[in-house]
Image (cartoon, rainbow, N blue to C red; front, side, top):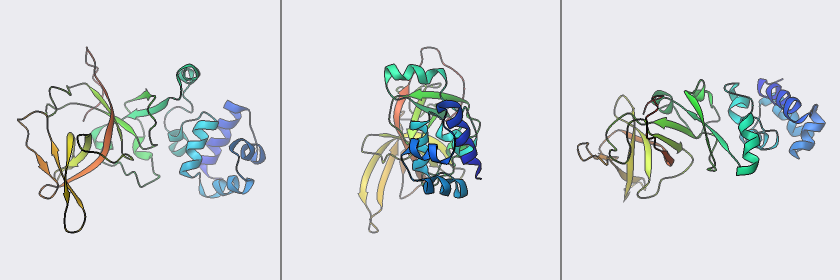
Length: 227
């Protein structure tokens, strides 16, 4: 049996008192054949998201075994406040390996900590801590940003990108410049601090990782990760 299904059966038994292929199929409103396929090939992405919703276990935990099985006590509080998503605060090195097209979530192993948000986000979403001065004064050292790689940026959005030969991870303001002859969108990434240069996609080695969906500022800085 696939390791992911071993974890799902464990979570269903502990969190929902559901056991066996037939009971699990009824809980998920899928056919027993679907459950059998998961046992052989692993759980689909949609299946993991449904497990998070129906069973209350973390999709990341199902995929990799990393992090807590469930949202714990915070999940019981969420019944009063609506749906809550669990987001890993990761390092810049981990963020540089994010690939939204892949089902592999192993890059989120051993996050610096877990954050919670009410925003409806994809399974590949993550959080980073600001360490540089390029986005001052709006973004200060120690601030956190939550990023969703599944959201395409719009003009004026803030994005996290890989930049340069060493693929440094940066936060910048996104400005589209139109399509080139191959119908690829050209864009600029702009620092809010005028002392930092403008980055142009047709001249510089740059790749957008994801779009910022939330910014958290602190009166007293909490030193944790890096961006």
